[in-house]
Length: 248
Image (cartoon, rainbow, N blue to C red; front, side):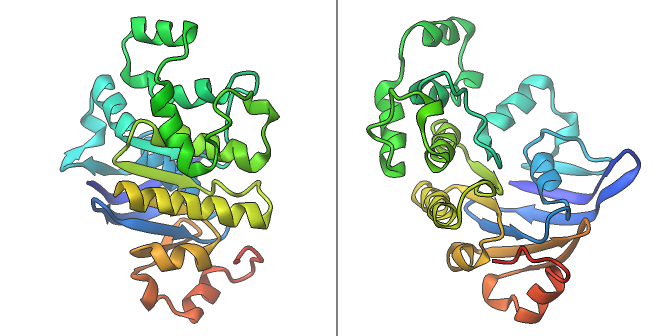
């Protein structure tokens, strides 16, 4: 589905990613791990088409993303959703409206306007909220929810469009350990149930290890390993997180 060829990305002349080569196949569940500052978030944004690489190319179904028209890029982004580190919800709006916003990019302007005036797709929103434990919160204001609930609403917003690829960029970074574990498992369960391709950027390797098909270790902008989870050794994890206290 997605192929990265010799990808590099620099910020203000400082390299953040260097010589990244990897491919992402349909249905894979990839754990992207490594210490903060290693380039994981930048890699997620490149995969999502939100950033352009400084070097190399990204291919979608064999075609360079750099050749996409604006409409083609928007169509790809509709199929590839991102759950951010922070929920980025509109606190003054209802859970329903926040979740429906995940559909707006694929709707015509008249339909978007109608959605602003009337609670559309109520049953569809309810179906995506149910397995996330939010069935009774559709009409609550997002700002009245707990941090864990808000992050689950953000997951629902990403899932409602039924994407082919879900990119989770450390979505539990601001949550307490108990809630973080629960939200991590919810994302993995959603990917399994919907047979989506998942790239999960996380420090919770003990949770994702059981259900992921690949583990990518990223440090200082370079791939240290790209292996099935059973082949990742304690020594490799020690090398990956050397000098960091973020390994959980």
